[in-house]
Image (cartoon, rainbow, N blue to C red):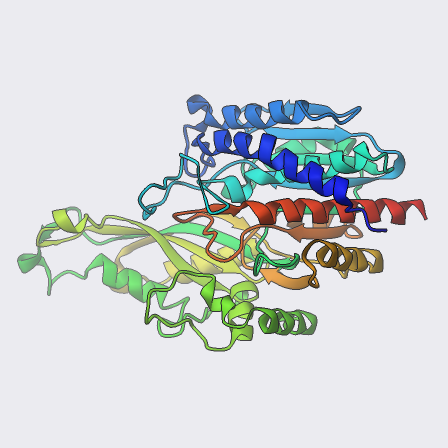
Length: 473
């Protein structure tokens, strides 16, 4: 069944142009940073404003029988829930999130995180691609099929507001919802990566994420460096020694066995296909400076390294003055924010315990060392695709793009997928997204490739229609 006819394409195009893009621009203007980065989120009111904006748009959509709710719990970020009754006895869950990462620095002149700018078909600003567009694409796809009278399973659109903080508030909402979500046979998640903007990318795995702060203290107060160095150890040198316990400082390999796992053969095979499709674009999707080399010249190794191996990034520091204010002082303490990506099958809590023990044991020079874990989210490895879904993804990509769909792992984390996988082990998953080359979610100059977002919407139309056809058999 080809569900993407000219009328469907026109509806998607017109809805994006006339309704979605203007609303997304309003959404970009709202600095609704995730709770981990905005402890005052509740009093600031930005999260509620963003959620209300999206809820109002949802209520305006001409989808018969749809209910739209903003679910709230004391002290928790809201959840937007759209429930569309179906004609078939089954359920599809469509997922996204509306909370955002912090501003970051380095935005190009004329661009900023909180002011939308459209240039050359790209909507710049924080949150449009990660992941504000998801609710718009999901409901537009459902509307396109409903307007043609295509029988569908019940569709539930769930948009949370703490994903960038590890989905800390979502379990409480799921418990409060109880049986209301039903048992979805298909989950569609629009919060993942794409290797390029010319075909459908289907995510087969997600890495976990472990974050925390490493504290090192050696002095009560800072002292003149001419007096203190040579007598007292510097906190930065101690911190580097501690980091060398978990990461090879030359090649970046993670040393702890609790953070390592074998890579399944089918995932290696999929990485080879994706690497053959992308070639040099694997390294080209990050903005390396001229002359800076990637970790490998083999695109297969780069894909596996960014999707199935543990990695460490130091993402922030306290205790280091800005260079303009840095005097000749031996610093008393330092704190480093650590972000580790974990292989999809690694238990994040076990990894957190191993990391904490490794960093805190036998501190050099008797320094005061402690590691405070912030969040530990396990990754996810997809079950095998059912034949109907495999065929549907390929049909969607060929119809929309004229090219085959590609399966690949994703280097990021979506905690909800792990939760769902454990709760519904027989459920099928289509996880895809618009985070392609240079889209730079979490960093400066984040953008949403608008034409690609429209095409992903059309792909969702095809998969929903094929799911319904499979249910009716």
